[in-house]
Image 1 (tube, helix red, strand yellow):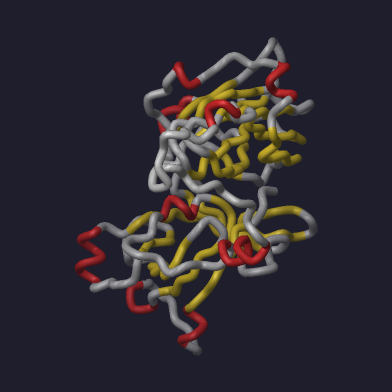
Image 2: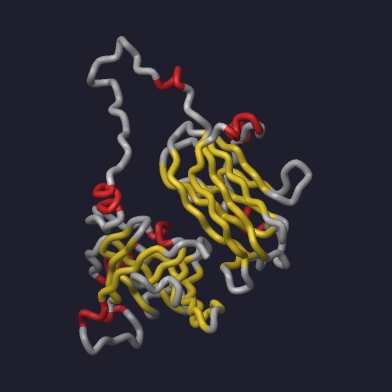
Length: 294
């Protein structure tokens, strides 16, 4: 696991780790509970071990417990903060080969769980769960001395209309963050047949489901174009990345118009891509949705 530990290197504050308490866990609120499978054609780290990615949204100061358990392999667990830095990791807990972390989240935002096997030979079924400790009711009581300007508004439960609106792609201001691409995407409704995988290590894979088995049809790399290249090419859309066999604009260039955690829109820039053309220019535009973890 040395390669990923280096890739996710950063200050790991031991002060944010707390002891596990079976009593407090029984009172926790479930945020995420998923059953998954590490398979031979899944994503792999530099040490060739398999991994899947999961995301959840957390609040600053919130205490969460993340558990990865498997009857088939030695579980290894990473938690990555919203800035892409490793926050915590765990191999074995309580003498078992399951992995678990209890962390006080330092900031609000979207966190990423790396569900991983300790070694390259590990594969099979697993369960990943995220639970949040109950909030201290005393700590959340409003200060009677506080004015209406300083008293925070309560967060209501989102209505179906608000949730539906959140799933649409909003207009993006400024540069698009390519880090949001990490994960698996497809054209709407095609997650069970074809997926485009962007890994944290900059690998790009086109995966196809053939005879109930996922196979890699194309493997390349991806990354942001340098500011110099963006200026040189006169790109004015919010974000631009390359996708191809080598890291330069001579492969395929994508301009991203809007990107969030659920969907991204963009177009293939034919002028800046090598050997790429469309009979209908509208075919260069696309919209992809994030696929659930396999």
